[in-house]
Amino acid sequence: MPYRRLPTTDKARQRAIDTAINIATKKTSSELAFSKSTLDELHNINSLFQNVFKQYKFDIKIQADKNKDYKASLETAKMYVSHFIQVLFLTNERGEINGGIKFYGELENFNGKVPVLNSEEEILKWGKVIIEGEQKRIQNGGSAIYNPSIALVKIKVENFKDTAIFQNNLKRNTQRSQQKMKELRKSANDFISRLWTEIEDNIQTGPPKIKRQLSQEYGIVYVFRRKEKKHLQSEELQQDLLFKFG
Image (cartoon, rainbow, N blue to C red):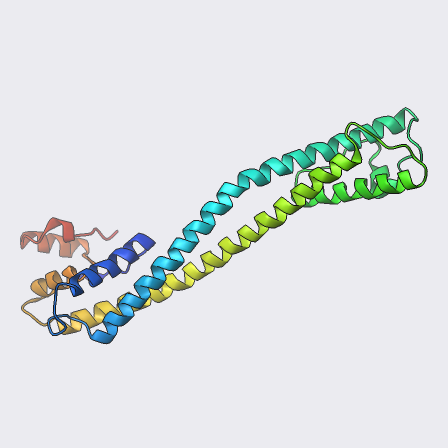
């Protein structure tokens, strides 16, 4: 016997819901193969599914759009932090810096090499180190480093920090939407399964072939195995109702 195939994509779920709603608009309540309470539930889940899906797509889009700004801000902050550290080391090597590298914490252990600045955490960490270190050195009588100045580095690092916070909030919004969609997909499939069972139970007309065809008008999808396919082809069932089972 053929078996029902529940939707496996959001598009297929929406199609199953839309098909049932559409046929409900063409039949009276006495003709309809499911109850008024099921129809009310159908409308509710349709509204919920559309709203959550729309929010999910919006969150994905805005995160992707703003990710360009995030990457640009990251590269700018990385460049300024890297350039300041390079100038700091070169100035120190020439003996032109007052107070040396001691004010910059762990930086003096890198022996003139710029720390790795590949991640958000690394950029913010070393940005904070050089900003606080330069301020302490100047407070202790040191001359300010320029090209770039620490004031400009601070602006770029703080801009990146704000952008990173905003992007992480967008990421959390997307993750929440994904979780809602995951839960809704399950509840939608559970409802569709109950809806289809109710439809099949209420369609008692004629042989199995006719019953299946009437059920398919409500959006029920049947899958036929190979042997069933050959048998049904011999009976000249519509080719578009057949699905191969691997």
